[in-house]
Length: 121
Image 1 (cartoon, one colour):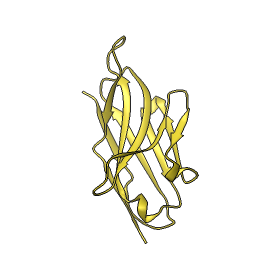
Image 2 (cartoon, rainbow, N blue to C red):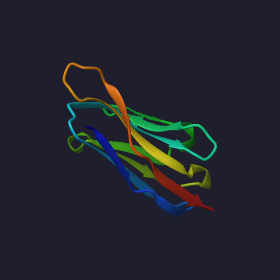
Image 3 (cartoon, rainbow, N blue to C red):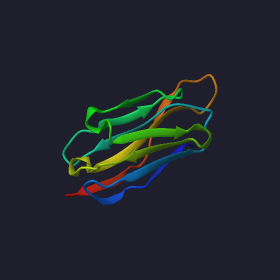
Image 4 (cartoon, rainbow, N blue to C red):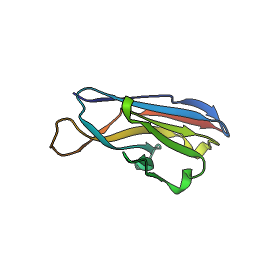
């Protein structure tokens, strides 16, 4: 059974920084895409950033230049460094990973349980 556990959320003042981590555990053969989504109250879940196994990154326009996604494939972990935080960044942040748990099978998407990030003005 695969489990994704997030950490690093919390309360921070506008202009501050936080670093989120998400570690995958369990029976994992291969991880392809890693990323972060977020969901604010009353809004749909939206993409924040993704990173491929090859290190190619993609960011939402709203976080470009402020957030940095990285991964440690040896540790099955993805990070999100968030700088210059704004009140509109307040949301529950979810990590995702697409992975194979058995060789030669399809990649499936797994989600973390979410971690709250609150930015006060």
